[in-house]
Image (tube, rainbow over all chains, first blue to last red; front, side):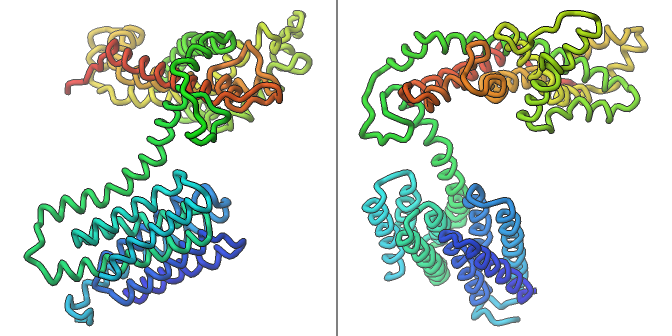
Length: 107
Length: 397
């Protein structure tokens, strides 16, 4: 479930990064880059729930703060990407229960 | 240690560069908040404070509008994530420092702060700025505070000396009183009829609510072109059928009433729905008891329905007051080129004052802000008076 979550979150964040280039929207690129960074961090530190919290919060903030600057199609595409990111973060967090608290190794 | 300092320095650097290249503005606030929270998180070693720092740093990326500062914002967000991990590791290494109550409190504050800060920046700031603007004279609405000159209540006396503003207030009161009585009476009548058990209830409810689904611009255009048109309009066709002389519904004398009529048509459905929800909450037992006692439908309406709808009526009155005070679109649609005195309303006066369409009229953002404040005071006063006058009668079951 953790891998599925990671793939979903990574797909969402990378897709939002790609969308940000058509046309080039500098702020959106930076926001998407940060989401990609957080997704990778979530995978690297699966036992830390706070990073997944950050990922979910930032995905919501992306939509809230960029809402008025996007076209309708942009909002829809971004919405789908952010839902994928949030779902991925939730899946990764659910999976973290199967990790030992010390060392992040699977129990 | 290093990561803490980096996460404080980066937003400060972004702030300084933003101020140097674009000047200080509201866009700089997230950077200040990020720096403050990073410092607090570093000092207290609080993971929740660091979490808030991450969110604020993220918001900072959206608000900093220069590429260099935005990149600094991104780096600051990355640094905040590492600061958060650092704080968590510190807490894990020192479990004796963890106070569950304080941690819960921190968590509550931490999660509420971004929302509160956003609310303050997005809502409170414009309100406070508008209030302050009403006491100052300035070139335009975006003039920096350094260019404002204090005039006290000068803007208020200016708008109250303006015939246009007084006319707009008079029009607003007419809409509120006449329109309010007709709209709410019709809405209540339809609500009572639709909840009395008639057939095709859903169809009628949807039909009456339909104008709310249509854009007000389209609705106003339909009324102007298809109903009020002097040559082809429906009203004049009916008059012509009875051999009457056609009436110019959009003349100066008639325009206000034409506008009010079409506005009421669009508004009734909305208030009807609120009344229906209120009526449906009244227990059926009361009506059954009244029917057994021999009360007619009219008596039931006056003795049961109306008294128990006080709360809903108050809600509707408040909504109607807000609707009237913010009335603009219909007025604009009925006088699209030059604002006509017959249909002018305060918001239209406000808009014309802040953004005059004629080149020879100077914009007066201070006076426009004063109009906004007067409207807000009117809404507040009406709401408070209604709260005092109309008391809710709770249904005791």
